[in-house]
Image: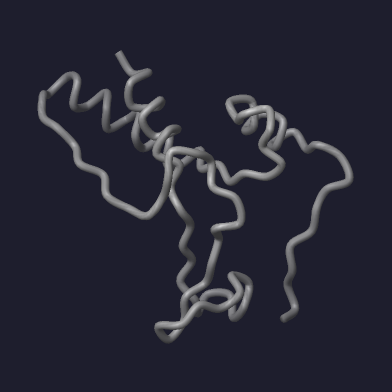
Length: 105
């Protein structure tokens, strides 16, 4: 591997902004602003046009931690192994998805 994950020695602007809604006891968590933005847009559309949405995926009702994984050739690989050649997958924080969906009026 030529790539690896590193920790910042101090909070970054992104981590400060994106972790405001996390439980105080969370040592590590994964957040997805794109997923929450998608759910907010979908909720707004459904509120205006009517309808329903069913979201199915792997996840839990808490912020996931260390769920990023690579999949290549039907096997799990390090997520930074062979960039562009392995699919990436993470677990969903359904609590955050529900909060984003219900926050839209």
